[in-house]
Length: 220
Image (cartoon, rainbow, N blue to C red; front, side, top):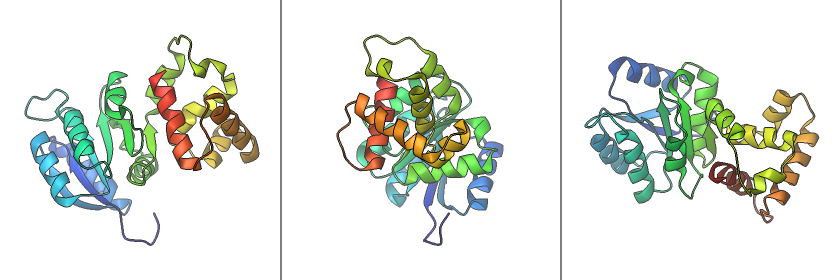
């Protein structure tokens, strides 16, 4: 993280041990945890009161212990769209990220709980979401890449372009994608430009088009 003021975070997690682990990772990475909530209703209240840069929440929370955390995240986004939301889950479910994203992938993230132990990955995901980017768990991306599609613009992408788009969905930068695929950054940039063209994403900011490309990937 930079020397600027630390990004402010509200955490929603009802299990004490997991909560302490999340807090420890966030604080070690330099984030400012401004509030903690143990149930969905309290999470919504504290997010609206503190207006943090990002909310990190479990999907399953009291009072119902179903998808209360997800519904709280959706409520927060509806009333405060500038607040980023990163939801974590112990279950690999396609519908959760799709429901969370809706029509706007900006400032949205979905990770499996076992990623929290990877300090660098988790911290990077929180920061990216806080700054308006999008992050999907690699396991979710792998499942979505392999699912059947019908009459989708994604069909026009080459195998390598699908790989690049999948890594973009994980929140990887062009440099990180180049390292993963063992190619040059210039090669990745050419693939990204081709992806934008095939998905008919008009020239705009690089960040905005990356988010739109991820949204197209999710929808199709």
